[in-house]
Length: 193
Ligand SMILES: [Fe+2]
Ligand SMILES: [Fe+2]
Image (cartoon, rainbow, N blue to C red; front, side):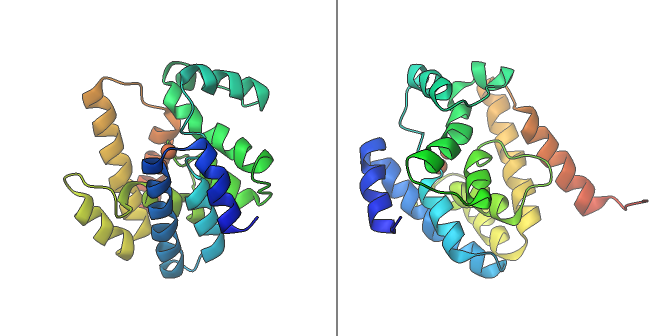
């Protein structure tokens, strides 16, 4: 599917603001893909589609999850906005005809991450948080770090997310903890195998 066609379809699912964010993530992901030798067009498509299920309300998220056979974990059932990642991957597959497994997993895990993330997953996870439309304390620092060191930037972003979730009194998805532990082990602990 051409980018133009994707944008027209996305227009039926997302409001103007979310479309702008998606285009920002697309552009940012493409830039990061160039830096880290990842497939630029895969990064662009994953960036454009990462939030394709973000327009649904809680009721629709549950309904669509049944329809598309998304297995809901106990945290996502309670913290329903988390569902838009895995549901988005199914929608990208069935509505946008995306077959590429790398793109689909980058969409699936863009919200809470997972241990041993692929480069494309890391790129989409970060691009979502540093695209040009994002404005929060520390975003400039994270942007600079993302261009220099992908893993350290992902770690910083995971830390930010966890701190934010805690201040909001929300539930932390176990994948986020596993993603952080994994990167810390990779970065700072020697391997004895
Ligand atoms: Fe999202
Ligand atoms: Fe997003």
